[in-house]
Image 1 (tube, helix red, strand yellow):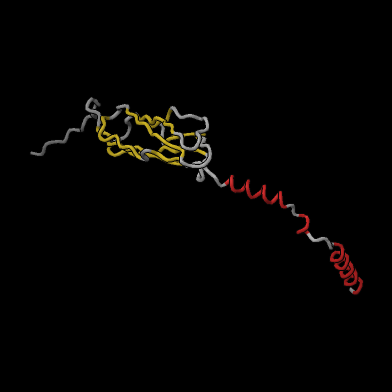
Image 2 (cartoon, rainbow, N blue to C red):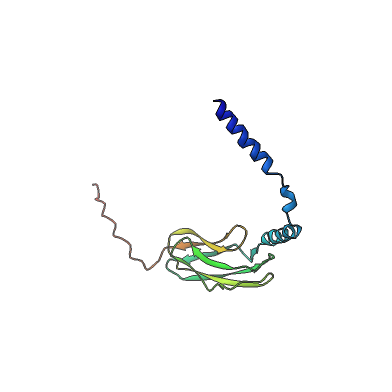
Length: 163
């Protein structure tokens, strides 16, 4: 037991005496300045601002194709890159967006087409994946889908008359 304590004490003594250099003397002020600039630039994100975040088509007939355009502007301090735009279902199709970087202050647009499926009040979400701080932005379309007047109605079972 004494040998173990003596051995550990010797190892601790060697460890404490071998680290006599001051680590703060190894820091280069130029590297610190470069890192601060890099971190400041990394916190500059593009910001996507829409002219509208929701579009209401109002009342539409079932199976009627409608579309709208969402205009957006990069109001941030870095180039905006939209990598993908997806809808919450296959009845809503986003189209025509640029995959090229959009400089700060510049504007662009994309189209959203809706095929009029569903019944009554319908709401669909379109998600924009971009290099913004949150990484995802959303816009919404809504419509009130009226029944198709030409649709064949299922036959109602005859109710027997009680006499």
